[in-house]
Amino acid sequence: MFKRFFSKDINIPTLRLTGVIGQAGIARSGLTIAGIEKLVDKLFSDKKAPAVALIINSPGGSPTQSSLIAQKIINLAKQKNKKVYAFIEDVAASGGYWLACAADEIYLDLNSIVGSIGVISPGFGFVDLIKKIGVERRVYTSGKSKSFLDPFKEEKKEDIDRLKSIQEQIHENFIEYVKSRRGPKLLSSAEDEIFSGLFWVGKKGVDFGLADGIGSINQIIREKYGNKAKIKIIDQKKSFLQKRLSSSINNNDIFNRLEEMIMWSRYGL
Image 1: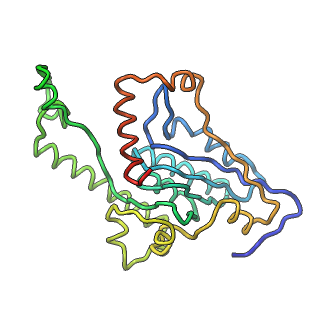
Image 2: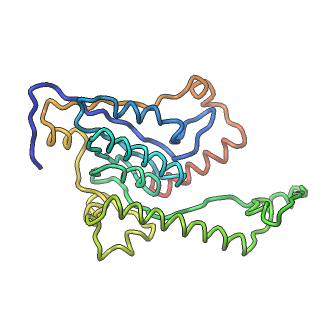
Image 3: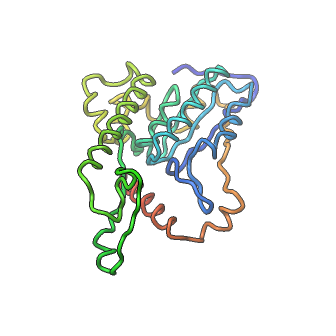
């Protein structure tokens, strides 16, 4: 790396992308394009900044929201002619890695988890529970597939096959996106492993080409832009309702939080 020295202080606008992608509610936040679009615009608003940075800590979530957020970042980087650096904290897996790939360069901590380029659709089944408590499920539809994967009904093979087909399509889109962003940096001899849904720690992620190096945001930014470079954090802020209602839990929140805990726990977090 070559050091660049500036006579004046230089700010590197930096946006934290933290949490599950696409799961937002009144009482708690999630990463969605609607929720952070203005923050992304603000990230690129400093005309003097030569680059912007992303600090990512996400186990993934919605493929669509991952794609929309990443594309917004990519488009603005081209429009504003700015370099984008991503710095992964605990984990950037699945949709979290999708976000990281919006950057021109990705950096890890030695203990960061990266990868999981695959698609998962978690859910719950309550068939035995409602039988046990004597509840009869009644669903009326005008289409034979309108009760697709109803958690209160027995699974159907055709529903599972249909879901797997959808997952395969999204997985292919994910693979093509990573290849378009990381290109020749990926270890070609390990492509099958890279795109298998597995994930790796620190240096192994670099060896596979999923990241460009090991280093903290302060270290890398100063190496590139000199000791006067400053990290200017642009934080996601909770709304007034989210702050007041964060301790209020309804039935939907229970299942959302349980799914969120499961997603983090996959990576030992």
